[in-house]
Length: 112
Length: 113
Image 1 (cartoon, helix red, strand yellow):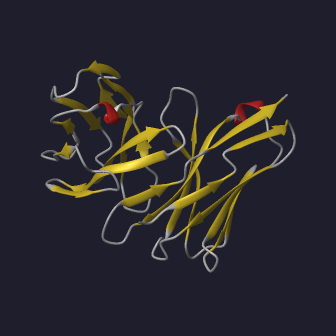
Image 2: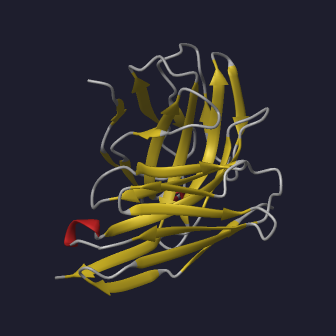
């Protein structure tokens, strides 16, 4: 089944404790992206990647890191999480830069 | 920065009526305009999209119109059904040379049976 998977689905952590949210897609897509979703703000793009080793900032990159060492994986790293990073996070992938994005199920992160 | 404004934030209609959601974008380089539906507890799913060289596109009960001059695009759902109840997001994307996508804030649609 073609899909985007994210892990973990739920995470509660404390300020300053480094964490990684994994994202993997099995559709051989070139493009991948991370979004955060907050009430009243919609989805905001954090980082995106156009291919292996090619990443660029979205609208809200501060406090986040990404890497794209393999085509299928695009992990999101929070090196020193803060409470304002409490949010619902979605990973997405797409075959083209102007095409349907396939979203993962989301990761709900709470930073205390 | 670039943004996409979406209205209304909440929309309640009677089953069988039509629903219209409107979006305005600011980046004149945007050339791809998708609409996503998000059901509770799930990730968004594409329902229809339109590219900048097309003015209108229809898929059964769903249609999207684009006015590039005014930088407006709209989603039209006819003969609404209770299963259309969800949050809808518009987005604008500048595909050339990147993968930047700006989403609207979302519209929560309630279809009353």
